[in-house]
Length: 323
Image 1 (cartoon, one colour):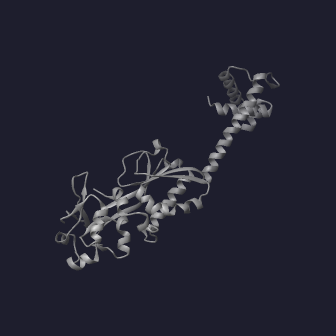
Image 2 (cartoon, rainbow, N blue to C red):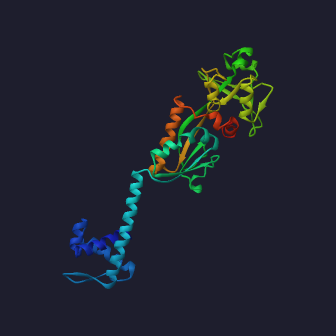
Image 3 (cartoon, rainbow, N blue to C red):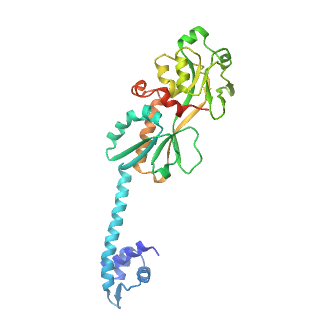
């Protein structure tokens, strides 16, 4: 039995003063509404109406139940209205998880804009490595890096980090500029030591369906992006790094991009959240806001505010190093 529907049918009979008028109001048959009330009485184990051929009258139990029904139905209606309002208006509490370095350097500088745009959203930001435990952790939406494990969560890719081979102008002045990936064999290539695979990671280049995997052959390799970048800035050789790590050094000329006509390894950044069919407006608002940040970043329209003051490559290396 649909209890809520039976309760609504019962109160309609009370308001209409009988089953026939209630059936007309609800646009159902008199037999249907009569059976609904009978099922409700059987469920409760009490008689709600005294009936005769011409009139229906509430019993003592019916009077009490009518009052309670109206209170309950009003509360349910108010809950539904509140939920519909929250869906239409971005408000409520929002819990967000963002990897520490990525968030601090590229997202946190903009969060005040989000707070001003959505003053009715109370946002809690957890700066953690991506846990992948949204539902268990009570997290509404998260930013995650790299390949995602299979799950029932929805993932929206907001940025695709691209690796860049680069070196300092001083190094290139002495060693020359490579014209193809094969020329890297004649350069000091500073590699990243993968703790997962226990070896130096290859550098991948692709063009016209040709894929070249270059094994860095320099005399120094590191398990830290900070160390590799610092050595490259000092003229120590060529590095192969995600664009987010070297974009500022490239912009101000401390590093120079190499082999731009070749495609390189990519690593996506995702927004992850539960089933989007029932996505609250507050979550959709935050997702669209983050998406806009990375779209501007991808278009080169906006750089982080004072990145050298807010974050060093050491902070970000543990999250963005790729095996």
